[in-house]
Image 1 (cartoon, rainbow, N blue to C red):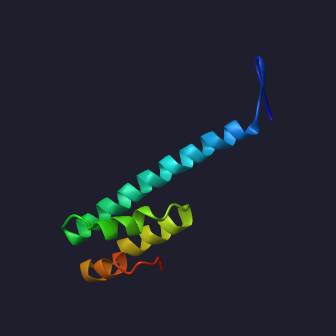
Image 2: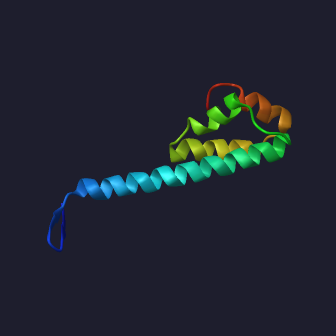
Length: 87
């Protein structure tokens, strides 16, 4: 627990704030990946393609997707985003 002026604040409050920051970071990262995908494909993404990226929230998964996307041409990226799996 964290001691604060006027009482004790449970560590859970700190964890909750950290989780919200992680969610915010993941959402921003997903948005960047989606922009990169649209730039490469030169079109808006379909719901399925957007869902492929948005369904991944872990930092390692997002790093892998970002690295993969940056190395793909449009044909490879189209297949990847519609593959339904990460990897």
